[in-house]
Each structure stands twice: as C-alpha cells, then as structure tokens.
Image 1 (spheres, one colour):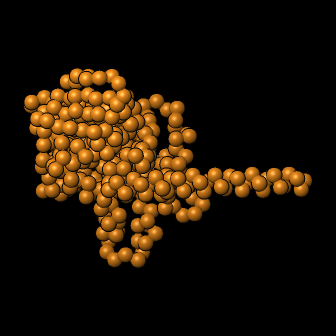
Image 2: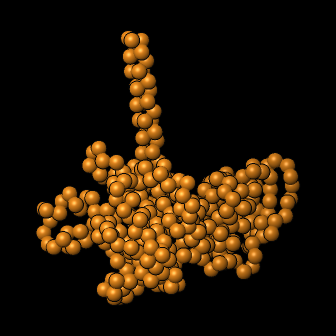
Image 3: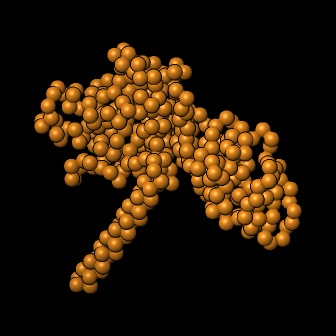
Length: 345
C-alpha cells in the first residue's frame, strides 16, 4: 500500500488507497478528515485520485500513514468514518497502544434500528473484554466514559444470546431517599425519576414497544438497590450503577446477591460521592478488600475515555488536575504542621 520516494528529511511517502474504498468517505465531507490529518501531524498532504502523498517529519509522516491504514480498515468493515473517529484513532496512535484502533472502533456489541453500540477508546474495549472474561467487573471512572451504557449493552447482548434469563439494573437511591417525603405519589413514582437514566439507555438498545412487555414479565427489572436485599439472583446479568453512593455494608450485600449463572458489573465515579458527610463509600474501599479475589477485576476509565461532547473530557481533566493540586497542598500543609509540632516538642 506504500512506496517510499526518499528516506531524507523531510520524508515523503505516497499511500495508494484501494479502489474499493470511497475517497469521499475517507477524506470526509469538504475534506474535513484530510484537514484533521494535516493539523494533527503537521504534514503536507496532496491527493490525486486514490493516491495520497504525505510530506513532513519522518515520525509524523509514519503516524499519518498509519492513520490512513486504520481508517481504510474501519471503512472495510462497512462502518462509517466521522471526524470523531479520526480524532479517536489519532489519540490511540499517539498513545502507542497494543490494540489496533480499527479493532477497537469496529467491535460491535449491539445493533438496534440501524445504530450500533461500540467501544470508542482502548480502555472501553478493555472494559468490554473484562466483562466477557470475568464474573464480576468494576468499571470506575468519571461521567461520560460509557461505564453504564456499555455495561447495559453487554447485558442486553447477553439476554438476546440467551446467556442469561433476565437483566437487573439497580442504583442506590441515595439522593431520592433524602427527598422521598417531599415528593408526591407512591414510593415507585418517587423513585422512578432517579432510575430514569437506566430506562433511557434501554430505549437506545431495544425496540421501545418491547420494553414494557419485558418489564412486566420481569425479564428486565429496574430497581433501587434496597429492593435486592435478601434475594439470590441466578441466571441474571446485574448492573449496579452509581456505586460510589453505596455504603460498605450495601456493597457487601449487593455482591453477595450473586447466584449461579450470573454476571455482575458495578459502575461508579469515586469523585462524585453523594453520601452524607462522614459516611464511607463502599466503592472507594472495595478494591482494597477484593483485589486478590479471582474472577473479579477492576477497570479504570479516565478523561481520555469520555465519549460525550469533547468539552466534557476537558472539564473532567481540569477537575482531576485541580483535585491533585488540592491534595498535594493539603499534604504539604500537614507536613509543615507536623514539623512545627515536632520542633515545639
């Protein structure tokens, strides 16, 4: 696919795109993808027919060539390429991950009404793979990293493939619990808004007319965590969302609901705990307790895995940096106080 015109600096490579690939899809509307390629790698790009010539720093030219290879591989799967796809491939190439970007972005978990759910980062693919290979998986990371959405997609996939007989989706109703007395309606009606994000995700993954039937039959259950107490959940795919709002006792209760033929995914963000002040988060301490237990794994996602608006990733990264600086400042202040106390003694 490549011929090398010269090995001197600046490097100049010509990439010949297979005739089976639509050049408009590859280069983007108005050559948008081409502009991203030039901007991200600082190379000059010239296109004539299906021949793309790259010129610039040898290392950047090599990365730009790999980008084109990955985009071609993605297009060959029948998947479209967007500007977001190009950005994510560039990020993976810069990170020098073991996984090929095309393999990550082409992994199809679930398709519904012409829309496919796929991982969009290396860590998301590792998370999905971990769910396949472990009975209990913890997905820990900030908002927007796809923790819950991918877990629910895997649950629906498992149900459709008859790996399980039912799906149970749960949240600790901490925030709702604080306000239940002030809300109108029955207990179910009071709690329902808190569980609404889980229903919304289901509507993305299943035909809307089938969801009430599945809920009525108990094939899919959406319930507050407290409703699981005392039950043994067999042949089920169980997702616990917002797990940072569990107490240690609730986390133990939930994990011990695991029955035969079941799988559990626990998701949460340890930086957004809504528990009353002084109450420990079960998610924050569980890794220290269970890190050596077999068939159980912890996957951490970060700001780089955020799949919402790209500004969300920047916001998460800025908060992470602020929290790190605050923690470092507190440690320095504590060290100074202890030093002063020792001198006084």
